[in-house]
Length: 210
Image 1 (spheres, rainbow, N blue to C red):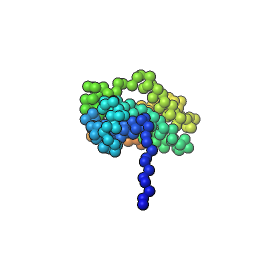
Image 2: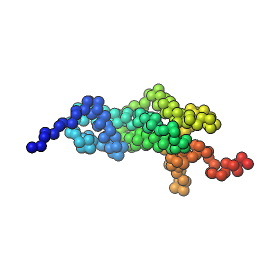
Image 3: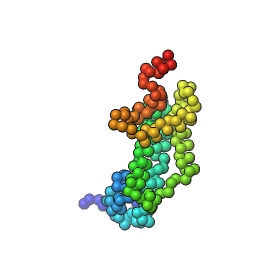
Image 4: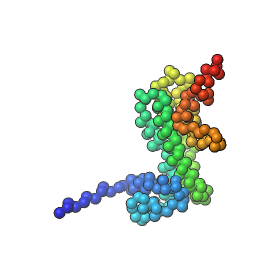
């Protein structure tokens, strides 16, 4: 006789809400506001009624998805996990990967809702308060500065100043895929090289100052 199966530990309301949001995020990015709660429930392996016990309605769930997409917590955790023993270029490549992944997640969710008309019509999530954006930028710059600090004696400017510039380079990379088909698109490695070595090709820097 088989022993009785043990029930999985129950989730707290907060854990269940978070689980539903995490499952919903890629669906919202793909379908925008046209995603159905039935699709989300099926992907989460729960009944549709469970969603409405966790969220008042679909718009409330969409608001929670946008709020989660714009939160920098995961990105900041990834930046903090980068080893300061790695070479500077490798640290910056890992940092650029974390930043572009965060910007991509945020852009996919918010962009899909704009494209489907939800943000214009319903505005499921109002713009983040200015102080929240400022806090996010400050925390990101501080995390990037920490990655630059071990090489501070080699840097032309203070680590915190260069951290802000590096963030701008990566954001520009994520938003500007190229103006034409003939224009090369910078990947993460190219963006890091541009930041570290400037606009000139290898070997041209010496010619420019010679």
